[in-house]
Length: 238
Ligand code: ADP
Ligand code: MG
Image (cartoon, rainbow, N blue to C red):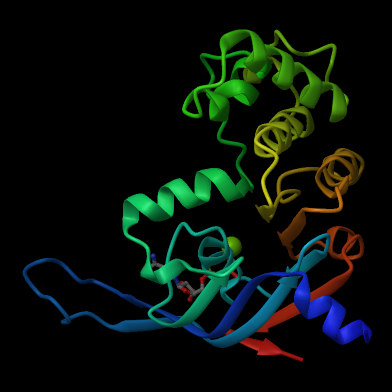
């Protein structure tokens, strides 16, 4: 079997000609009255299991829009996105949320940790809605924190952690459910080089059956990926 055929068999996410338009200044009193912004246009791509893919491009080129669609947080205005054979746009909001919870781990530029919980509590949180027992939640959260090098910080509140440490907590939280896809939007955007590197180490520590997509305009982050998809003004630059 040729390499190309082998790769396509392992394809995890496939986007075909996806376009996302936003209505600006639209209110329920002026439907369709606002300006239309085309954030991404006719993007096609395929991501394989075990691949680390970078999404590059200047500010406003559509990276976050694409990431939200890849993470099943949003759906395209036109075009299709298939995830392991599931047509994401055909799901109801509720089904899509369930699908996302089961399949995707998210990391954002701003860590979005809950200040009222310890590092362990933050990492364990996605396991609560999955009905995992308290004892197992603690165990799995601690294992994940150890993996990102924070075993001595499990009881710390986010406020008492550095930015890089907080982002590693966020990475542990994304990994704790063992998702098929990690979507990280500017994960090193607020970090200096050294702490950013440790975050990427944690993020890219892949398993055979997980893909990682990282949107960034940080060259050092993009250099760690297997390949880079470049966006310019909402389109793909080859
Ligand atoms: P990037 O992440 O590369 O900076 P974005 O995906 O955030 O790019 O934005 C792409 C384009 O879409 C920009 O022109 C931006 O202003 C526009 N855009 C993004 N989100 C919205 C929104 N919710 N409403 C209107 N326009 C938006
Ligand atoms: Mg962005």
